[in-house]
Image (cartoon, rainbow, N blue to C red; front, side, top):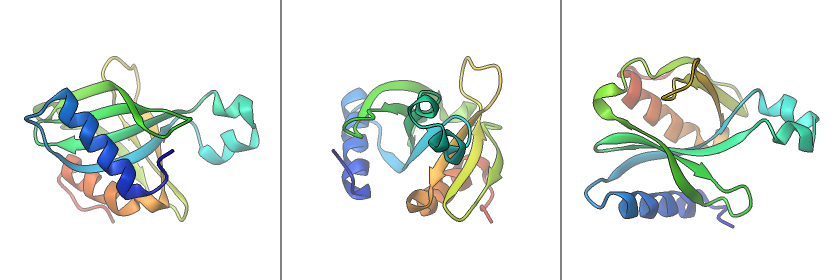
Length: 139
């Protein structure tokens, strides 16, 4: 099970290279899609059923979103690959908090934006990712 951030980033980079050898990752975060992580934790196993774990990566060519394994914390299949030219307006409602920050991301085929919860250990990378996607620094 990958626990260190550097190990996780390396595994995601390898998965991207396998999918598209010509692409190069710039920044990767781990995000938990769904309602508030605090609320879902209070509901125990039932609450965990409402959460989906993802790795979100900005590459040279696209924003690549891998599903993450809950058991091994490794990237699984690519859930979404959004070309760079289609990323305008992808992110909204950025909210930075002490432990769990979140933003909303419009995923292809979804009727409304998905809430992406990001733990504070990924905050620096989250700020880089959001700055890249929005074109504005995150305050």
